[in-house]
Length: 211
Ligand code: VGL
Ligand code: ZN
Image 1: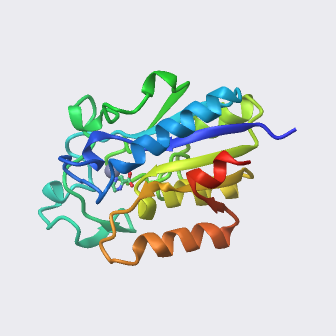
Image 2: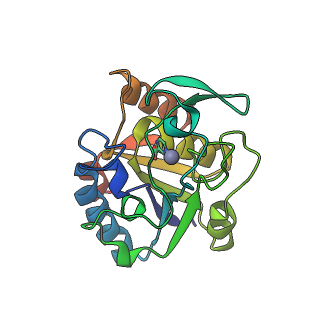
């Protein structure tokens, strides 16, 4: 029997309107997330969430590197986009969006705590060196299928979905529950394509309701 969990990726203030790394229309993911939380809970599914969780001097911050935000370079041998300071541990920007029904979340998994490497995926850092507890937590509970939505499509959603597929989960992405940074205008579209080619099923909230 397949057992499903809903995975909410980085639905934090800094990625929403007024946040330091605001994703265009990022807030619009929140009502999709709340609808999915209600549906999944009604079917007895678990709900988990990731949080980007950096120290104030994280190596991905342009301010730390003396570079311009949204330009690119290399961090510890990996290509790296330099970001505005965001999701600093225990700041308002790192909190869940206030309208997110976060009391329904069964477990939260933090990532990005290592100063020297970025961590887009909720499962691993960008070098696949260290694993979060997410995979073990899900497998302990017999979860085989993941339904994923969140921020941002072209970074944390994409790499979370690709790792989930590699780890053997069946993955469904709720596309209207995702929004991208789109440094290049096509980035989100290309990210959805990458997820689909790797084996993810892409559907909308409306599609999900009639399954
Ligand atoms: C993210 C850029 C930097 C994300 C996190 O959640 O997609 N993007 N850190
Ligand atoms: Zn980050």
